[in-house]
Image 1 (spheres, rainbow, N blue to C red):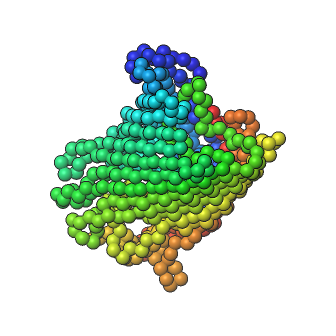
Image 2: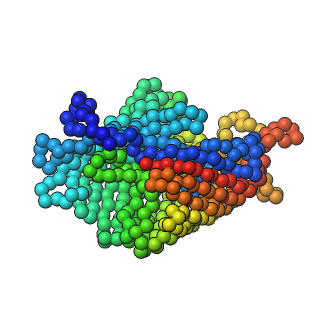
Image 3: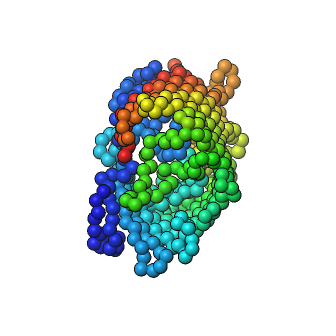
Length: 506
């Protein structure tokens, strides 16, 4: 690391520490998400084996605690400074963090990754990790979220909908931390165009939470938030002012023995302090003995959306999610169990709704997403080799509306009538054929199995391999029927894929 004198930058005279790059992952990938299909035979398209991979190369149980697929080459550039204040007990910190993300098409994206300024006051007699801190996020407070598992976290920048992203979503967090408990208050603002006055207005969000270690091995946490999302665009064009407001609560219980309470890497603030070595992508450690953790969390959210069955009216739409995570390590053996429940409205919460800003019509049959996945691996220390497997079953979210799928007075002929629509993730839809054996087609369970290996070649470079099989009878694509009208048709349900990576992490 090198020391730089900051003259004028951040208006601080303390030294700053900058590494070449911090939290870096370089991935050289050769993969095929489905060797049983060629280009143009599936939706989404499955190219032949190639250098490179993306979300289509992952399974529903992958990346439970991160927003990334794991195949990206990315890095965070961090310029960090920390210094005692002129006032007793007060310490100042600041970090400029930029995410450098390579695009599959070439080039890079550079974006703020929750840069911050932090003031921490530690009264006399308080412990090293205790204090009252104030964190300001000048550009993006996306890492300041509610919820605990990243897959069902909420309250990030997208909570104000994508209309706010161009201006950034700054925020602030005030937290009191004691030896066995913490509590915080925070807020965010976003600029979004008001469709009635055609000018940008400020939208507000408020967040609060607390946690307590009831026992050394038992933690209970909870948080709540309120966010404004602007007006319903469709009603605003009619001169009707219908604000969209969202509220929600989240809670978690964690029992842990021999390991700390886990936190997603995408929640943590970056530091580049030579006195506090921080490595997010560190290799797995095997200290020996038995350690384990079990966490159960749930969230309930609600937001006001347009009521499609009543002109000019709005109604609250509830959304629920539950996540179970259990992990155990015994010497060199690791075992994990993941479980997830997400209502369809939870999946679409940030859009918000489906179609955007609308609740589902009365009579719509809604089905949540549910899955269970069991995984295990074993580390051979002399060979630096770790083989493993994961098996899982998922019931994907789906809905069946009593009205034409796209609404309106003149829907396309191929979408007239009742059909089941499978929702795999935010706005990722598969429209099923109308009939299956004389009855309405229903979403079917998805089965997946994956064999994995990791061969650590050094402290920073590893070879990683995955071979997976998926049975998914909800895959569809549109093909012309005898009348020339495009209709959804089932694809081959079997998929066999592989991912091979040479990956450097430092």
